[in-house]
Every structure is written in structure tokens, then in C-alpha cells.
Amino acid sequence: MRLVAVVLPLLAACAPQYPGEPVGSFDVTGRLEVNECGGSAVPARDPLSFAVELRERGPEAFWRRAGFPVVSGTARDDGSYRFRTVALIAVLAADPDPDFGHAGCNLVQTEVVDVVLEGVPTDAGAGAEPDAGPGKDAPDAGAQEQDMQLAGTSTIDLAPEPGSDCTPLMAVAGGPFLALPCGIDYTLEGAPRSPL
Image (tube, rainbow, N blue to C red; front, side, top):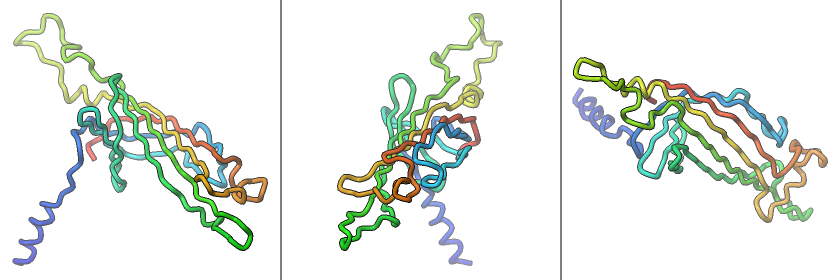
């Protein structure tokens, strides 16, 4: 019993801390607009569904999904947000083969997410009636937050790393890719949800 009493406070003290202040949490649906890579190469889901929390600290913004690393980005003056991630993907089907002079293939994946919040009051007094007085109700800030909608795009680009030879991945060589470099584009729409 004593061990449990010691361990539980330690676990509570290790609750994760995230950067910035929460702006809102959203259930996001992504509609696939284009998959230039081809469905065999990249079986892009349609629709795409996930929950996200948007956080902000001055000009910095943070895109937090449960179970994924927090992605940092920028909060722009016009009220929009941009997040960019880059990852290197080693393609096993195109490993280096010195006997045949093949350099192997690594793909650079770049994703850019651009979003804007719609329905956000631009003036603290917006929505208040001109004759609002002590007997009148002030606009409910919590209700205003619940009215926020998220809209934007996600663009994923795949391109061979400099020095790579990705020819074996091309459809003309029997591979799955219709084109390289190639892009996958989604349109994003998000509705308010309970905090993550």
C-alpha cells in the first residue's frame, strides 16, 4: 500500500506540459483533392479524420495531436497559422546496390498545413448591444470559442533526396509511383470539440 501511495503522486507530477496557451480543439475532416503519387504508392485515406489542439505563444503556434509529436509553426498577423514538417523516408524497395551501380532511394516528405479559424471575434465588444447595461448579459466568451471553425489545407510533397536514384519506383519501371516529385493535397475542415 505504501508503494502505491508513493508512485501515484510521482505519476501525477509527470503529466505532460505543452507549449503555449490553448486556442481551441477541433475534430478535423480532410477531403482528398489530389494524389499525384498514385494510390498504389501512397494509399492516401479519404476522408482523413483526426482530433487536434491549436496552441499559441506570441508569434509561435503549436499543432498537437494525441500520440504524435507537437509540431511548431507560426501564427500570422492575419489570424492564420502555418505548420511545416520535413521527414526522410528510406525506401526499402530501392536499397543501394553497388553491384549494379544503383545509389538507392530516399524520399524527402514535406508537409505544410495552413489553417485559419473562422468565427473568431475580432473586437472584444463585437456582439454587445449598444444599450447593454448592468441588467444586460455580456457576450459569453466560452460560447464564442465554441463557435470557432477551422478551415485550411494540408499539402504533402514527396521528392527524391539529392543523390538518390528513385527510377525503380516509377510506374514506367514497374514501380508504384505515377510521378516523382509528387504531391497529395487535402482540404481541411474542423468543428469544435472538447479539449484533448
